[in-house]
Amino acid sequence: DGGITQSPKYLFRKEGQNVTLSCEQNLNHDAMYWYRQDPGQGLRLIYYSQIVNDFQKGDIAEGYSVSREKKESFPLTVTSAQKNPTAFYLCASSSVPGAQYFGPGTRLTVT
Amino acid sequence: GQQLNQSPQSMFIQEGEDVSMNCTSSSIFNTWLWYKQDPGEGPVLLIALYKAGELTSNGRLTAQFGITRKDSFLNISASIPSDVGIYFCAGQPPYNTDKLIFGTGTRLQVFP
Image (tube, chains in turn yellow, blue):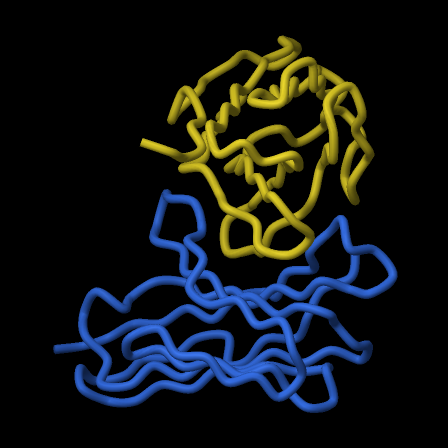
């Protein structure tokens, strides 16, 4: 089955700990994205990558880091510097500028 | 970051009714997209529009790319309970084709 997978679905961490969210796609898409969604809100772009070994900051990159070592994978690390890390995190990919396809999301809770 | 103005914010309708929602911007877009998000899930792409004036249907859904390139609407005909969810519009600006700008969402509730 082709698609985007994110794991885990739910993640719990203690404050002060870094945590890495997984995103994998087998759609052969060049571009990948990370978004954050807060309750009742729209999507805000954290980081995106158009090509392997290259990525750009989105609108709310502070406190996050990413890597793009493989075309299929774009992990997101939520660092202890992120002041309000509890949120729903969505990964997306696209083959051409325009339509992005989303994974099922990871809900991160930090206490 | 920039966001699109999406309206209405929420809608409560009876099963069988038609629904209309729209998205507007002060600047032009190259592409308009419409997504549906169920609670706790990722958004699913419903319709993609690539040309000004384009009218595209997907089953009971119809969307149009406004002639001015600054707006788009989505219509749902004969709503059913599974249409419940949040509908987002998204636009691709000409100044940065790497990114999408998302609307704030329209929450749809359908009552039997």
